[in-house]
Every structure is written in structure tokens, then in C-alpha cells.
Length: 372
Image (cartoon, rainbow, N blue to C red; front, side, top):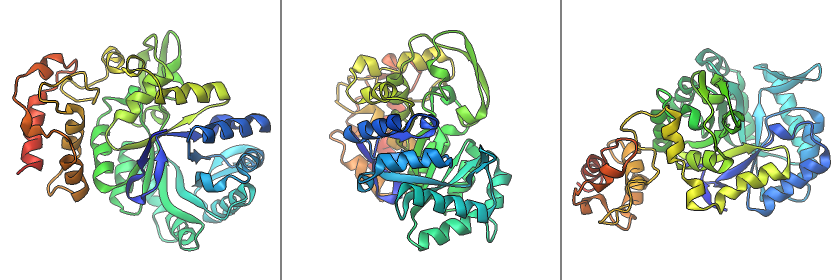
């Protein structure tokens, strides 16, 4: 398993986490088996968005005696009404369901408390009012019942507003191939990286749309993270391709994958030991027809570089950077074995790039930003 920092929280999270949605309605033995298999393979982050009693009890059984091995997320604003899922902004109801979560999971805290499921700026502004959900989240944090505060959402504008509030440590947002050229998405991912906000990518398969074998699909806003989109499925898209793409994007700390059985979990975990050919998402992005010409997707198809520069990594740092350069960003650049100033401007990287990226200009930018 590979681990990354979850932004400024300092938590080390597995790059593949377990999303709990699809385990709702599964037998307890299935939930226990999937959770245990995930932990055995190094998964240490579990997102539990639903509030159904049996669902929470099943996870409580699966995690019994194993709590210290897991980073748990709880959702503030996820409730149940008449046996059905219900989103609420009511503070009293939200707190009651949060404490129910702690009780059923047999724990006294969650590691990340997510304000649940936002799609509009207006909705976010409601919870930010005095005595709203944000105030409740801070109180629970002071009481030791939550270590860090985050937000789950499906809209780039809301994510930007949340980050600018400086009260959010973690953002959980759809990041997938469908939204590769979503207006504002690249800027948002860079903003997360600059501000030290941990970015948890949800819906890496586009809510399952990307794994359809044939035909067209319409992906809704909640599946893309920005706008609805109709497309024809590209044959041969696999969980490995989807996850390799997501984990290559700027700012992404990890991807949470919804699975309903051990086979689906194994398919996701195969990303960690897949061959280079299996992880090569470059052609998929090109075939999808949803990339912006000249935008680097960090696939490193421009390599090998005669000067042995890791062009993809340098490009990532350039895309995240803003003046003045943050100390940790400068340290990451300084740690590179070969820096951009070694570029001879031979141009072979530009010729190889399938996305029309002027990598030579990127290297010049890196020198200006990091070496002057």
C-alpha cells in the first residue's frame, strides 16, 4: 500500500480508501469480510456516509477490536426518515445521529467529521451561520469527538467557498475521467494543494458509469463534480485505469472506492501492483474527448527525458505553485534528483506528448519559480 499525507492534518492515509455506500444492504458477513480484507491490504481509511442502524451496526461488528488501525469518517447531516436516507441541516437531529454513529461503531470519536453532501453555495452558507452545523462541528471537535473537520460535496464553487472559509481541513469531491476538463476543476485541485486541504476523491468510477461495457451514459452533476455530461463509453475502461488517473491528479491525497463484495475490492486494490501498461490511462483520456489541449495530465508519456527530469512531477509542482512559494513546495522541488534547469530544450518531450503540452515552457516556468 502507498500512503500520502491528508493535507495539513498530518494523517498518513492509504491512497485507496473504502467507501461504505455499496455495503448498505449487504449481509453482515460480507461487510465484515470486505473490511477485514481491506485492512489486511493496508487500507486505513473508511468513509461511512449513511445513518441506517443496521449499516452502522455491521461496520461496528467489522471494526470490533480493530479501531486503532482505521481512520474513520463520520457525516454530520446524514440522517434517516421513515426508513429512508435523508439529508438535514437541523443541528439537533444531526448531533443525535452523530452520537448514534459513535455508539454503534463502539468508538468515542471519528478522525474526520464531514459536513454532509453540499451542492449549492446557498446550502453551504446556511451551515456557516451562527449556531449552525459548522458551530456544532467545532464543538464536537473541542469535545474530542472529532479530530478534523471536512466537507463532502459535488460542486466546484462550493468547494472553493469552503476552502476560502479556512475552517475546512478535508474536502471530499468527485474526481474522475468524466470531469477531466471540467471548468475550474484543475484550479480547485491546485488550491487544495496550496492551502494544505486534504483532498479525498470520491466516485473515481463516475458512480459506476465509466465501467459500463457499451452504449452511452449521462453522468449527473453529483457524479462529475461540476456539470452533467453525456458521453459514449470507451471500451476497456477498468478500475485500475480509473484509479491510476485519479491518483495522478494534483492535490489528490486518496480515492475512496465503493465496493459491495471482495471481488470488487480486489479489482481496486490491483491498482497497487498492476503493470505499467494496465495503469496507462493516457489513451483513455484522449479518446474521451474531454481534455483541454495543452493541459498536462501527468501521465509522463513525454519520457524518457535525455536529462532524466521527471517532467510530470515538475509540471505538478508548477501547476500548484503561487508566489511566494510555500516552504513545503520548495522542499519538494529541491528534493528532485534532477531539476528543471537541466533541461536542454531538445523538444523530444513536446513531440511525444499526446495532449499538446509545451513541456519545455513548463521547465522554464519551474526554473523561474523554484531556482531564482
